[in-house]
Length: 358
Length: 282
Image (cartoon, rainbow over all chains, first blue to last red):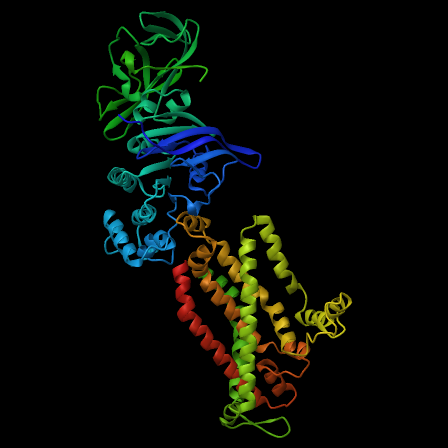
């Protein structure tokens, strides 16, 4: 396989607003054609990164490259990237057609070519017949599609999407997620997507960049960041996590034994730790199974304190030594009820071990 | 029931006010515009269109045209000054914005007649501006800054400027800055962003401000009397003179009614064009 081409490169990029440092010297390579998501809670600096790439803000220090060219100080309008804004930012007095044609008109593309390209784009997102409508005459989802093709029509090297689906209701958001991903595959355009929604990040991205307080916490495929989080923050931010804090008491045969607060021992298949290390063991709720009969390994006894029926799954909360843990069981399982004494267990491989330094 | 009573307590004074102080006087003016003037400043109760006919005399048509010209020039100068100002202020932080907008409003705290006397001190032959320019050797002879059309326009622009700035500022400051970012992101330079995005959105406000400047500019007789030196006649002081000097109330009333009709037509035009634009902008 040939080396993937880097289309956007951030080099020691940092950004401060006044005395407040938003981004602390990060490096990031985005490959051509990938769907990469910047994921973080609000205020973590993910939008700041996007604005540095689009040119709407200049970095405080560091450099930005697009397709090998240093664009750190290049105006936004001269960059071959386009941004999709959270509130769509459609021009209110222009029709759908004029909105989509705006970028090409600024480049002085001949009107008949504009017509062909706009028609093609409108067809791409199934908005035929809407050309002469004004943005306010469209639904949220339709406005979003217009704003996406208004960017895409310029054949940008990268499309930057700043929480583009957050204003839509859940059902429409799910639908647009699939549409966006299909669109990206079809066109092969590089998408840099900003969101605080972990479901969105996991379901759409080729790679996820988890950002915490202006630093990149982890970069990896959705499976990597979900199943092999490098820190408790990542583990907790992406989905639910049961965290057991403890100390390594024994290491042998690729197996490590961890004692959790003198209460019980857990065993995991890893040997990168030494006796005495403080570690956290993370187990996803969907990997925890319940049983009424004790098992040999990694089996803890607890009491069910609450059950939340959620349609296709039921969330079960179990109290073990005054700490509450969560397990997920399928559907509406009638075997368990509140105040039942149950045993939790899980496969050895489903334990994620994270050192305490992280 | 109780609500209704409370509501009418608040509404009735307003209705009475508009009825007694606005509607009734206008109806009275309308009625006397059909009366006949008698030689001693009195009126003969009759019905005649004579007053309206005599407006179509070349002297009065000239005054109409001149009034419109001065009002239009005033309006355009106000637009040219206000737009960049409103644009610049709306980019400042909230505190600076409120300081600037307060400064715009400050002149209203003083009586406008007094402010006009202030302008006389500045503009007259041996006034402040001429003295400064003379002492700096920029000019050899004092400039005629007042007692002419220039003085009138200066006074009108000065007085009416806030009426243009306020609607423009409030329109510009509500523009979503992301529209401007989107425009620049799509390749538009500053000028294109202005003409294609900002200007169309603020057009209703520009129209609105234009109307608020143009209409009073037709009638500000005291500015014309003070800064025009009594030599220049526009609609406002023509009407005033008919009532107070010539004591021909029916004729003054006819001109006043005509002015009301013209203003009404302008507002109708605004409703047709501007009102629709307002809808689109919202």
